[in-house]
Length: 204
Image 1 (tube, rainbow, N blue to C red):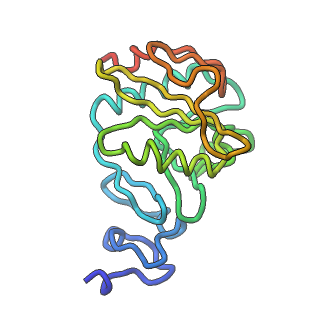
Image 2 (image 1 turned 180 degrees about the vertical axis):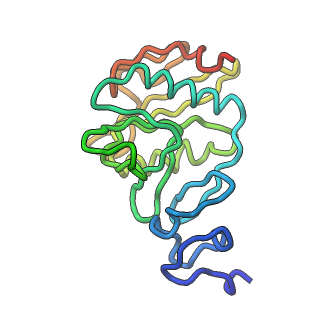
Image 3 (image 1 turned 45 degrees about the vertical axis):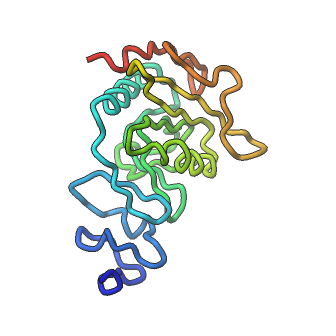
């Protein structure tokens, strides 16, 4: 059955054929105009559906966005759930990202150029553990994004931030040499000075 509906080479992804990956995998140009009644991203040539997140995940993501937006300094901008194209077959959507907006028309830009991204943040949820702990950080490191934060949920339902810096010699992420794990408060100077009471991220 799959062979009968497999899209032809170069064919655009549509609501009717997106679940049938071509033998050469989907490319960004094939999927960039795809409209579906669900959220998705492109990982390794696969259209990956982003499952419905729980309240905790969304609250932490949204509140972190607002806190970073309040703390940001020029020339940086902050966005949430925005696509960045790493290569032809990978266009992830970090939960939150910080990027250098110099030279960008942020009113019309379709995706954030990966070379502009300085921080990618993923909030781990039940269905995203593998991607957030392994797949996405590997992609972000490959793209030379300088900083990666992974936010986990502790036994008291409070967010814990794992801060990683790109090791310039090995090309992989290493725990921040200053403070690799933040509990209670997130205090860091990169990509700009931040001082956040992590408990406020889950307050209703």
